[in-house]
Length: 264
Image: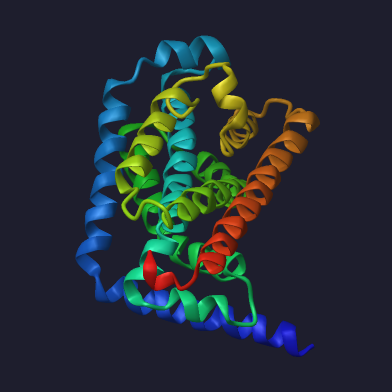
């Protein structure tokens, strides 16, 4: 009972700290919002909707919303990846990493709570992107309700991208600055995944959010959702977070074996 109480207290503290940080560094938040909105506007006006139309049999306005669904998944997944992959470097910079390793909860749990609470501001970006789509497309209240229903489906992909972020965060212990690598990964996923257009390749099978995009698009179009797709979506994200946890913990143990974190 004490552990459960301590866990919720940790969630409360992390949420409070992250909200304070978010409002303190408003310019960083505004810049990130403008970046994601800017990329979306470029995609929405330059995308070839014929591919989406042929694949799903959707009209032009529906095709735009299908692109929005893919982009929402990519956007929130990119934020989760960026936050979790920078966890170690932030801890090293702030000098809090070694202290956190000696706490009651594992670093994975601490960083997961941190990532989830920090990712809350994604809801602001999601609202803005939906609003933009409503202006340029014929979106009725039923469409809006369908988009809101899709938001909870994004949660497993956040967990999966958090797992990938843990892997990258572990490598920070060997190579301090991996921000450019993260940007490359985020850009590659945007281009190669089903974010803007449906495609079938091996790369898409291992990206955490791709099946979630397919499921959400089928729900929006009132198409049948294959139960196998749901299980695979949950499985691939579970696999990524387990893999990330194992790699991350091994990296931490390796550093502890060699000595203090301050040497890195």
